[in-house]
Image: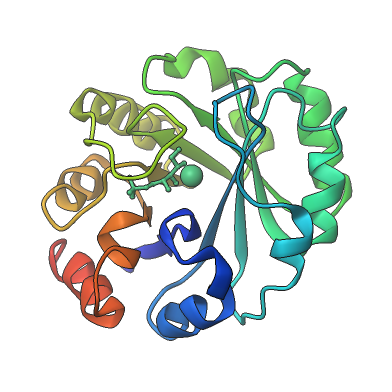
Length: 213
Ligand code: DX5
Ligand code: ZN
């Protein structure tokens, strides 16, 4: 099966985003864009203007770690900045059905993410309405954290429940952990430090792909 690799530009050099993206573009499948509001998680990351300036042939996979995706304008800003997928968190403060409707009405694929401690049950009512589930395998906020293996049973359960749904995993993915997530049923693998933390990005991505063969 063909897996998808989504390098997270949270770990890239923010002052040279287009140069960083050039280095991975021919080997990756998506560009993962982590957006944080300083409230859902302490850091603040990219502004929509910075994302708008990205030049790439790859789809932008926008992960909103924010409290109010709609009210605070994140859905508008990042759909305007060229997102192909927008993922909201089940733990955010707004109505999930409304958020799904708003994202879909902008012709963008819809994802829902759950934190490591959030049970799959929380999102079961929405699975028929979305394109992707993002399983967090670290607590959101920072790159370079250790992979939490306890999330693997959620991936297995979800795969069984909805085999056609894309399952993305985010946090602590490296050549040492990717196979576990793959075997559990994940299809899309976000990786920050294990790609942008390496000198040779082409080789880093090849190592991730080889680890699931
Ligand atoms: C964490 C972010 C991740 C992060 C992953 O809050 O959602 O996308 O960039 O970084 P690594 O791969 O280093 O764990
Ligand atoms: Zn992310």
